[in-house]
Amino acid sequence: MDQLFRAFRVHQDESGFRSGVEHLNVSTLPDADVTVKVHYSSVNYKDGLASIPEGKIVKTYPFIPGIDLAGEVMASRDTRFQPGDRVLCTGYGLGVSHEGGFAEVARVPGDWLVALPEGLTAREAMAIGTAGFTAALSVRRLLDNGLAPGQGPVLVLGATGGVGSMAVAILSRLGFAVTAVTGKPEAREKLTAFGAAEFLSREEAASGAKGVLGKERWAAIVDPVGGAMTADLLKSVQYGGSVALSGLTGGGAIETSVYPFILRGVNLLGIDSVFCPEPLRHQLWKLLAGDWKPERVLTAGVTEYPLEQLPEALNTVLAGKAVGRQVISFIN
Ligand SMILES: NC(=O)c1ccc[n+]([C@@H]2O[C@H](COP(=O)([O-])OP(=O)(O)OC[C@H]3O[C@@H](n4cnc5c(N)ncnc54)[C@H](OP(=O)(O)O)[C@@H]3O)[C@@H](O)[C@H]2O)c1
Image (cartoon, rainbow, N blue to C red; front, top):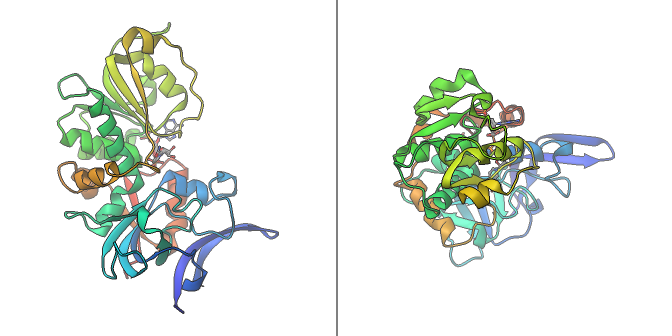
């Protein structure tokens, strides 16, 4: 196939680090069974890291980042996919060790693809993207560990961010009273639109505990922030409650004690969307297209950029200033 396409590429060589939109030939893409015409991608925190030299995400250069893509199959050596099929891809090596979704064309292994579920457009799938999938996985794990409406408020950290905003929308849709924690007081109206019942600043959310345990406040916590906030908030989870921990925007180290675990039976649940196995991956996408569809963020929290404005979207997410989700459109 001799065909040019547009892609955002990062380089690290003797001339230093640089990035930008380039025209590439399809023959330069990695060898894999399914070639996809990308209609939409999205911007996650990890993509922000992949776009800077100190991000420690990209291992080999030059490289096309982008951990999410949705579009249409152009060609396939995998019998499960035919030209014209609508598909999405998140996680695995995409945009990390295998060239990703910030390109008009991508080549990926068939095992990484999910057929676009009924009820989702490609744009909606990317507005959800890895962030929304991670929020859904967090909610699934909390429910599987006993969370039910009526137990008390559920705290969502980093609530204006990708994972946070999606978690607010999914939980409110399922009937939970959501308390949103945000560092952006100006975004409170948006958070109400996403489904939050209450707001707290990061300082107000602090447990205030002087010792190893504080007042029992939260039935559960969705935590894409990590670091000192996680350690502190473990002290204010109700007896038997859970924390679904997915991220590290607030730090990678957690200094805690055993007491929330051994005196209150608190569960610290690790959330990994990248290698989420089948059939759970398909089940969650089906829920996201149906009963768990985060309509409130899809309606009030999506900003669309053309590929040329991707650097602006990447800078916004790296600065912690994104509200809701940012999608990249390849549809002209
Ligand atoms: N485990 C997985 O599979 C998985 C999947 C997706 C993402 N993640 C991780 O989850 C995290 C969030 O990803 P995302 O794409 O949702 O990023 P995002 O859109 O940038 O959202 C992160 C949010 O965290 C809050 N925040 C930023 N810095 C903070 C700080 N120092 N202390 C407390 N809160 C802070 C901000 O929200 P407010 O201003 O509203 O407080 C920010 O919008 C990242 O670490 C990402 O790598 C993990």
